[in-house]
Amino acid sequence: MLSRAYTKSRKSIKEGEQSKSGSIQDYEDCLVGFYGDLPLISCGSGTNRGVRMTMKEVLRSSVGVMGESRLGLTDKVVLLKGDLFAVKRFRKLRVRRSEFGKRVERLAHFSTLCEYLVPITAYLYAKRIKFVLCDYYPMGSLADLLAGGRRLGHTALNWKQRLKILLDIARAISFIHSECPPNERNMQMNVHGNIKPSNVMINIDFSARLSDHGFTQLAKHIEVSDVQCQQKPPPLLENFYSEDLSQKSDIFNFGLVIIDVVAGSRFPAGFRKRSLDEIKEGAIGHCFEFAVEGRERRRALQVLDIALACTNPLPEARPSIQQILLSLGNACHN
Image 1: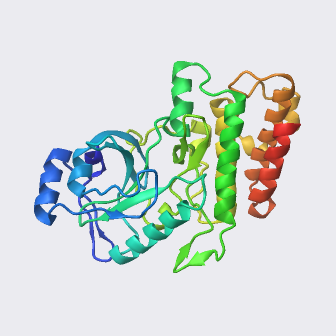
Image 2 (image 1 turned 120 degrees about the horizontal axis):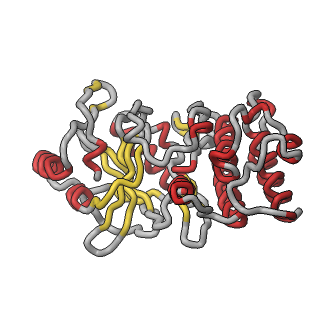
């Protein structure tokens, strides 16, 4: 529930305050009673554009936690009329109230321009709770699909579905990286900043949409326990994700996503020192977690080669997203 985002209070004169611990029932009455039933500010985007909501309605419609991260919590909301949303509630903002609204509206407009980005529907800024409302995807995140299959010991996605998902993520990154002008009112629009499987939402046709674009420029990363963080990547990958705000860091993190999608926990330690030749020669064993032979195996090796290039320790040696898209396209047809 949304209540899990409430932690011990920590005030900051410049940046607001942290939420306090307690149940959602305790806090919905407290918040609504203190502030009144605050209306959400609509961004005019998303599949449910035009739907008017209030803080009270959203808090009481929370039906389950979808995931947690160092930025905050994601909760599923089902309104009385049946509309579904994902609520992304931030632990601690890095900007003031007026700047928060401006940045969210800027990101919301940007998300309407690309079919591979998750639309932002509305947002709320109150003293003890700050969140954005996004479209909901019943298939969940890429992290959900991968982790679910691994827990059950079977392949959740076949090779074609995985390749389609990677292409859609790359198209979303390409759109972000091509944004001009790159900087707009103290916000770097041409960088995502938090690319990882839990921020890739999956449609019922296994197409993918990238979420949380720019959210690292809204909120701070807060350390949380392993129990709180859900659907973590395989242990060999989780410590490598970069938090730097740059296009080269986006590319690096996308390389880790590729490795997770193609090999997951089967990929060996020290992956950045490995080469495609070692994989081809079987020096590190069978690294794919799905059945693949013949032409599809060659294509999978090509994609893994892209991942190795993306995770090059030297940022300047990493390919651009346009080069990656070209290589992924070649992998589809070779």
